[in-house]
Length: 280
Image 1 (tube, helix red, strand yellow):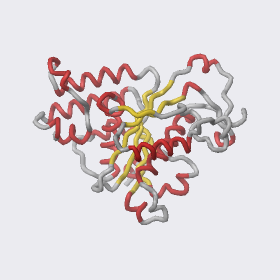
Image 2 (spheres, rainbow, N blue to C red):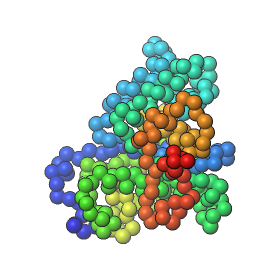
Image 3 (tube, helix red, strand yellow):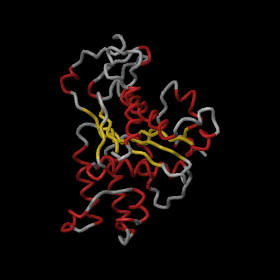
């Protein structure tokens, strides 16, 4: 096995593409028992199809001649018919949701998430941690685990990291005006993905991650909008909130609970896992 952090010698290096990992948070209000970060992974070659379905979903809301008026899909408002979606009949809104989630299911787009139980964390020795930041940390490592799982090496990845550039991913987060929050996210990312991984081998954990993460305006980023929808319905499922349309079922097979080690063995009891909800 190559030394930790050394790339494979493979023809794959000649045809490398970058996957896009669109991250978004949910459960940020005090009303939710769950603080969650989710990442919709769009593998290379899949973006065009989800882009076309995004356009189709817009047409469910607005006629073609008014398409330029569209801003963005926001899961909560689209589902409940509030804010910019007020006055739009439920059938049209729900059809738009079905079209958007269809992109996830039909293209088998992975949705990696980490969902902190606020109550459990508040009563634990780790109560000083911010739930959302803990979820972000776990979600990033969950994406890395997804990338490594694509490698059929049959060896213990903890004994050494075999890189495959076909599984490199770029993390894209929803932009915000909160400079302190953005700085915290950047700090978390940098703590896991060092600037010079081959010189900081012991510290680097995101071997397939791009050298930096990027912030994008969700109104211009369809991947973040669809990630927001996935977040919304997965969180409802985790919290046991009734959702008669069963939108969660459209993406349940794509949902991946982030379980990085050693974090999961130590702190897994503070997180939700959709598989546990389905066995109750």
